[in-house]
Length: 71
Image (cartoon, rainbow, N blue to C red; front, top):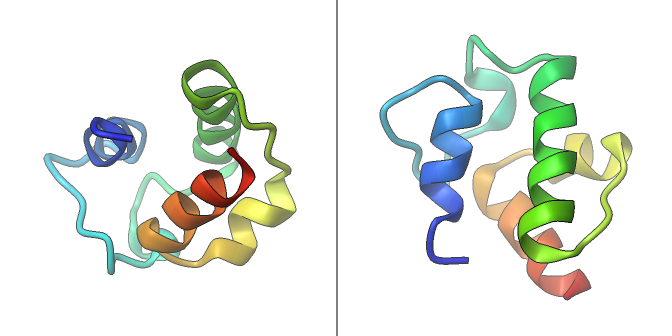
């Protein structure tokens, strides 16, 4: 999960993200971002996620914890 935050920054079209950042606070937070996170989680971590799980995560840290908890 070393590159998780940089991958999230790329998906959310910002220079960097903090673990405490709320997902909905990003301008690029939309259905395409959710699909990109689903693809990232599956290809990089072999963890399937649903759109509902991602939306329920609320923060970058919540999303990271969700993926780590399913590994």
